[in-house]
Image (cartoon, rainbow, N blue to C red):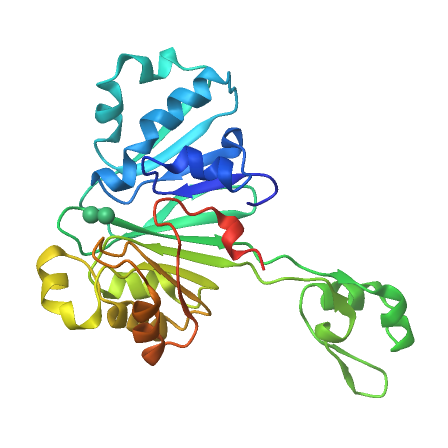
Length: 284
Ligand SMILES: [Zn+2]
Ligand SMILES: [Zn+2]
């Protein structure tokens, strides 16, 4: 959740229910990012768009997805743009796409890159703009800074030299700034270089880990990742936290999967649900 708005990364069938369950209003969804056209990742969109229109939403909604999403939606007469209560924008991404910004919000942007799965699949990286802090003018004065140009320089991140030749650094007098947070979404995929690029220095990486480490051959055949492979991506990318999901139905309990990943990457945990990712999950 950012300033009241919700972004969805993939939209499986149960997404609406889970949003409600998480206390997030469906009406606040501003964009949906679809990774690929396997049912568990996008079948929820039709229901979501239908509900939003029935709720008489008027704010625009953007759907970012592999090319073809508009045709899929148009198979259902009630989902053509003219039939809806709100403007629906599509960003369709061709299979030749390599990298770029696919969506811009008020103070964030989302980049995409292709992943390695059985069909064309996109991974996403959400990144907030760094928020500059405020200059504590009173504090700066006590440190002997009084010229307007010096205030400006400090606020812009430049150190200032005092009369006695010592330096005052921005960190001494600028308070409340915050580095923009980064969330990366990689599902479904083999571990790959583009995944690492998407995840670089992320605060939170969601990476699929469909199989336990000993089933690597199965992971290769099906275009998925094992726990150790997800952990390896997290490690290479230098992320702070790894959330794994998309576990094969054969696993009733994810404890062993998490322990496997933690051998390589300590801050690994299991998501309780794979199909939606609200950004509230990086609030903390
Ligand atoms: Zn898939
Ligand atoms: Zn899947």
